[in-house]
Image (cartoon, rainbow, N blue to C red):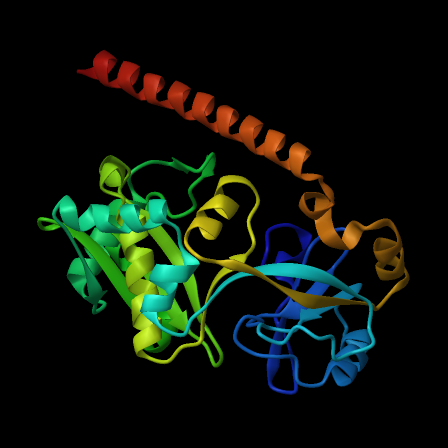
Length: 310
């Protein structure tokens, strides 16, 4: 559950499906596993959520790709999912990416990087933990996996090991990047994608992406998704690697007076969703500078303490 006053609200179960409730002041319910399963009976879920002893103001659910035509009469808005339609690896290579990306895919092997599917071993866990612990800040925000132990890393991946495909990039004997791809019923999803900052000159991410597409093509997986279509540099990375915007409906159903008010004034999207792109990018830049300054001060303090006690 999310932080805040709703953190003590348990998961709600309806018809064998689990719903989580997040957000304040507008408490919003959604399927806990919405990327893996469809809401089987929206009408019954609405009825039961209204009867719940826990306050729920909104229900939101969506149609997972590739279903793009609205099937329900509830209020909906369009969301863009980043997805690569996959037929063959050759089509992706020749038609879905450009010359610059093809050159970036070739770069890791030219620099001596070996990229391959790998089992979830103690060695892989240790390599992932080392990647987690490179820096407390990544992409301009606090990195939530920083400081994890091998045991914590292993536990984090335990839930979906049977459905996971791990792809590793090694330079000599060092793990310098990895993908976790999870197979769902109608697509595969990139769940985690990280690299060693000190080895970015070898472009391991591009090689890992190519291997993920190759594996999906070999196994007959028709689509590879990478969360929602991102703004800014993330969206550019998605576009360069052949991802397309797949527009699907997300439904919102008010379950209380506050829920109706939230829909009327746009609170159901949250602050992030309500911001225009220019404002969102500016806030990201400000956040990045704030974290950089904060952890620079922390590093200076640590050095001063070491010198004082040395």
